[in-house]
Every structure is written in C-alpha cells, then in structure tokens.
Image (cartoon, rainbow, N blue to C red; front, side, top):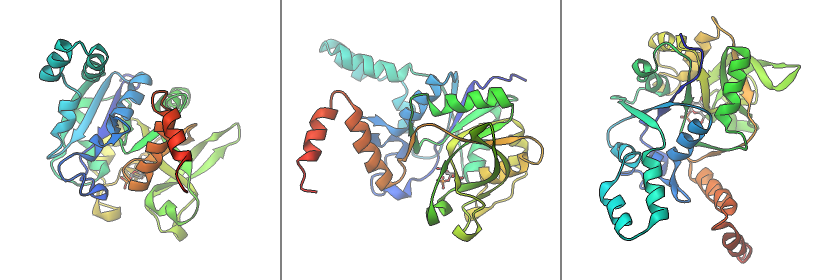
Length: 291
Ligand code: G1P
C-alpha cells in the first residue's frame, strides 16, 4: 500500500437546491466565483498540494464539469485565429490542469455514499476528499497543510474551524483532545453529524477537506443512513476512529461556503478585492456605495 496521498475525491453529485433557479441546469460546482467555476478552486488547491489524480463523483446533469476540464477545439481554434494568446492559454490551461477521472453516483444517498463511489479509482492507498463548495483561501493550500499532518502523524486528518452558537448544527462536529504541543491538532474521540446545538460535543466544525486511510471504504459499506436519512461520511469516520487514530486540524486560512448565497457573496467580494486586475477599481466602487 502506498503511504503517499496522491489522489483526491471531489463529491459533486449534489442537486444544489440552495442556489435555485441558477442551478436548475448548471451544476452548482460550475457557478462562477469572479471568473472561475468554484470546483476549479478546489482542483487547483489539490494540484498545488501535490495531488496527481483527481476523481470527480458526478451525477445526472453534471456534464458541464467534464466539458470544462477538457479541450474546447472550436473555442481554442477561434482564439488562435484571432491572436488572443492570453485567453487561449487560459482555455488550454484548464484542459491540462490535472488528470481527472469521473464516476457517477447514481442515487443521491449521501456524502459517505459519494465517497464510496470512488473506491475503485482510489484503491488501497490514503486519499484526500475535497468538498468543492468549501473554497479556502490560504497561503499554504489547506490540503497541503493537512497532508503534512498526515505524513507526520500517520492517521486520518479532518479540517476543522471554530463555529460559535447554533450555526454549529449545520456541520459535522468533533469531540477531541487538543494536542498540548500543537494547538492546531485535536486527537478525535468522537464526532457527530449535524447535532442539535445543545448536543454539539464542541465548537469544532468539520470543514470540507479530509485525508483518509482506505479502511474508510469498508466501513462506509457498512454504514447505515444517519442524519437526513443519508449515508454520512462523518458516521463512517466515527467507525474508523475505533480502529485508527483520527485528527482534527485547525487549518490556517479562510473558508467560504460557496454553496450558500451569503457565503458566495462574501467570497466574491473578497476574491475580487484581491485580484490585481479588478481589486483597485472594485474597492473604489465599494467605497462609493451609500452603505
Ligand atoms: C458536509 C459534511 C459535514 C461538514 C460539511 C462542511 O455537510 O457532511 O460533516 O461539516 O460538509 O461543509 P453538507 O454541507 O454537505 O451538508
């Protein structure tokens, strides 16, 4: 079994109902954050972290993602003929960004089931999971930070962040013991998917980045439907915890929930402000608004 994390699974089969009507035809992963589909941020993060092979778990009506990460001959030929070299490089760059395989999740049975759909592609080696809705802005890519923890500690690693108040109920929540030598690391003792506020074991919410050992696949095969009647990844990891060490890791960086309207607006403003070509003009515009 390879001990290196070389593959990343992107569950992208969800319906995106939070963004209707925009997502009636367009996969939510293809909604643009400034000028890039949100899934491309995750793919770029994976590649920058050293991932070699990406597995996107898709579903019905999600074909636009496959077209996006492929060559577009008509577009490229037109750009070439018109001498638009920079745009041609952008278009070709997306098609050559990564080695990507696709697998269909035929029924919407939950996140745990989506990850299980990638089993044949991953095989018997540790792997990453990236939830494309969670866009993370970080100096060192979030997944790279987690792969470093995995290589050092040898157990599965889940990204976490502190969430105050009842909002914690929207997440998987960790119970764990903070490492006295590294306050970013928690050794997990339990976890629960979308608990009631009163039942949440901590303020440590699981964010959509995971490094997992392949044992999770066998455990997910045995996982019964949980919160929302779905096969939950959190429940599979709780079973893994009984056999192997699992760590929570408070990553350095800022996470945006781009699967949510308000989160998408926040991300749009912050990413646009950071762009050298748009930032200065956009800042001036915002300053001029009667807020
Ligand atoms: C999923 C996971 C949850 C995690 C969250 C992070 O939930 O099931 O444990 O906290 O992603 O974004 P979802 O947001 O898909 O309902």
